[in-house]
Picture 1 (cartoon, helix red, strand yellow):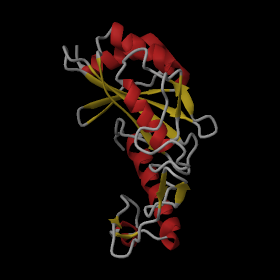
Picture 2 (cartoon, one colour):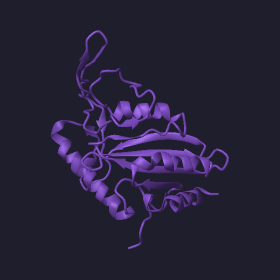
Picture 3 (cartoon, helix red, strand yellow):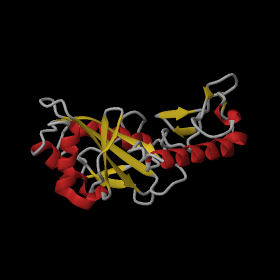
Picture 4 (cartoon, helix red, strand yellow):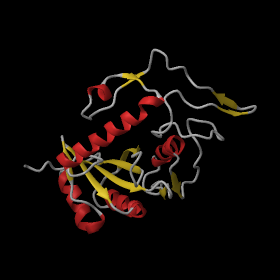
Length: 223
């Protein structure tokens, strides 16, 4: 069984809940339209298709779009060598989806990191605590609206943070867009945030036109 064949079996099992397989540079992805079904889908992938290893769970901040969050599950079958990514969207107002610890216990730390860095909650997680920042830290550092310089915070007797001067770096570039100024590596400052946002929106439009989906590669249609 190949990765594409496994993805097609998932599609056949769950029908309209799952997109057609999207293949790009050897990676195979599926989009799950209902995040509440993620445990059911993952159980089938593990028990029936032998995806016995959860490589990673990652999260994307689609800042400016709705749903805001995309959660990506990277599955691998150690015996077959197949790999599939399952993507599902979660709105910012809800910011919650079921935990898959009941399927793979290694999801524990993956989900805790996403909770810590993005603020997405995983229902039925047995120990959903921060894993990098301290309890009581009020921000989520991997959100796109979190400044590169950081934010000041203080929890008396425990920890504090201060902003980091940006003079001289780090220099940041933004992919895509029609403006060389937007792509040029530079210090990110509030005065240029709108320029960077427009560049990202242009890039998403380019991806949508080329691949049929603004959040990841898909089949390229011939024009």
